[in-house]
Amino acid sequence: MKLSRKNGLRASAIGALVVSGALVLSACGSDNNTETPAKEGGASQTSAAASDIACEGAKGKLLAAGSSAQRNAMDLWVKNFQAACEGVEINYQGIGSGGGITKFNQGQVAFAGSDSALKEEEVAESQKICKTGKGVNLPMVGGPIAIGYKLDGVDNLVLDASTIAKIFDNKITKWNDPAIAKLNPGAKLPDSTIQAFHRSDESGTTQNLGKYLSTAAAADWKHDPKAKSWPAQGGQAANGSSGVATAVKDTEGSISYFELSYASANKISTVSINTGAAAPVAATSENASKAIAAAKIKGTGNDVALSLDYATKAEGAYPIVLVTYEIACDKGNKPETLPTLKAFLNYTVSEEGQKVLAEAGYAPLPAEIAAKVRAIVPTLS
Image 1 (spheres, rainbow, N blue to C red):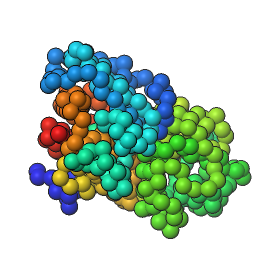
Image 2 (cartoon, helix red, strand yellow; image 1 turned 90 degrees about the horizontal axis):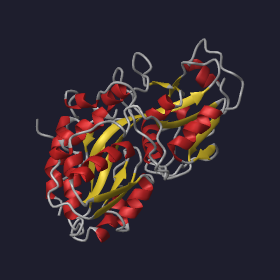
Image 3 (tube, rainbow, N blue to C red; image 1 turned 180 degrees about the vertical axis):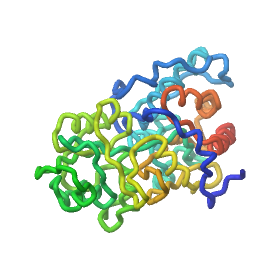
Image 4 (cartoon, rainbow, N blue to C red; image 1 turned 120 degrees about the vertical axis):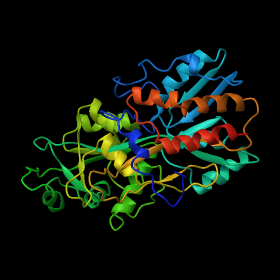
């Protein structure tokens, strides 16, 4: 099927996103490269044979930085690529989406990882570094953002976009608030203060949550949907997904947002979302894939930025999702790093590279999107 910006991705194309178990997406904004929420399906697993990788002139050192949501996948990709390509060193720093884009637009790294597509002003800034071109978004993997909580006696909590917005905007401050009680009939909700935590660092996870709330609860979330830094007043801050997850794990009456793997690793209960469908939708990789199935390609030319349907009411579709991208210059890359950049990204988006994602517990790209990215990477110049 020919890809079109006006057409949603077919459910069949998204089939590759459905993987068993929790999607192992780690923190989107931590600068702690040792932070690993779950080792099952992590970077220690066996991956593709090095002999399957085409080095294609790769040499020397390649620096990259950004989202640590893809860090475990990067660990595998880098290990395999370096084993196949003698003398090549790839250094990916998981410092967060905002930090990665900043480094990219300052010319400090060959590519950046980001859990959200470049903003218009970031694309404009990239033209200073990409000289004859601009930064483009190349998607690599997707998955759900969980709303995790700790509330003794409440094992199955249901919220909708409006209540989530009001909780994180400090407008609902008690667990037995009528809005929460209405969504959870029969639940023993305590008359205690909600301890809401948010990210202290710039984060694509924060931005994707903001996009969801701005779309699905526009009347209750008036903040900038493009903000990577937490935009609301009140609440408590912690660094990285591991930081907010630990805060929730250790604090009774708490709530926050993080990649699903952190909930699984820390045995944190997650909210089911009332989207207006027949039944509330749980945070699972399979349910997230149903929402991503409605994505549209909004990028043009060599840019494959996706527009996600955060307001979906499709049965079983979990609406709070993210897609992680690699950000690179379409033209104007540094000649000394270009061969290694192309060879490495050719591998990560290849069938073998995507197979590594599935083996590691990530969700590989849908076949059609992977094919489009595979066609673009060799044209980088």
